[in-house]
Amino acid sequence: MRLCYFILDGDRHFGMRTNEGFLDLDIACRDFYATKPVKGADPSRFRDMKTFLLGGAESVALANTIQEYIETRRKSGWTPRAATGARFFFKTGEKIAYLPPILPGAKLFCLSANSVAQAREMGRDPPKRPQVFARFTNTLSGHEQPIFLMAPNERPEVDLELGVVLMKGGRKIPKEAALDHIAGFTVAHTVSYRGLEFPEPGGPSDWVMGRGLDYSLSVGPGIVARDEIPDPKGRKMELKINGVVRQSGSTDDYLFSVADAVHHLSQGITLEAGDFITLGTIGSTPGFEFGKPERAVKPGDVIEGTIDGIGTLKNAIAAEPAAGAPPKGG
Image (cartoon, rainbow, N blue to C red; front, top):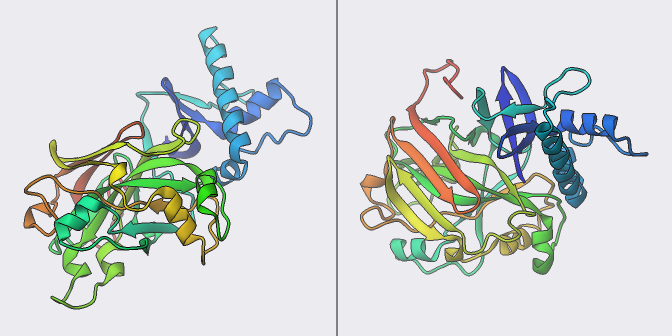
């Protein structure tokens, strides 16, 4: 199952991507229960991502049942449309735009220095426990949306990371139970402005300005649920810029796993359904190592990050829009 937010003709939808197109889960669920009434069932349980996540494994099972029901009826010649006339199935090829598959108001956590290869590039000893910083929702953009450079002269760099979305929250979550709190996995592009992050040689880092500017976290295309990928170990990761491979590795290069991150964060922070974690970047290809000026991106560059079995996230780098003007395509 691949969950996503998408827009069509100005209307926002929460649903899932199938082989044939996009499904609005809210409308589809209401129609399903209208056709197959179940005593005590809540036909509005998929009205948004939060209600879906709070339903846990039952939501996943019901969504899969609804998808199978619709596919069976489609093959018999039925056009998926609710009794009210509202459409809930949209074919691939319609003018659908992805939104970042992140719950509004979610906490965004990012692991730093979490790659063996990256630590080697930087000449640093790997950390002994997870190092984490936070981003904010102003940083978000989605698949095939532009990444606007808000400080193009401050050495903007793009990295590929594994993204994790929580199904349920908690505090002091045991490591052995941590994966049971995960809804699924996605792809993330993170932008760091090194000139802002390290404003003074040898001085302290400015994490907020270096990594918190608008459009500095792209996520998508959707969330691959754990019914499809129970654990993201051994997944190949590859970042291309203008078709040239710039990062290559796998999720096995991470020092701290998804379970480590959830356990660590929950020791003092109450996690909630929809919270988002990126596991950190991976090592670079020769000639593109950390700190090299060649890593800086510019308007016109096209970024493609792929994690095997999870998907490919694609973004074009664009110039900062004029002050007060709405970003085109944002």
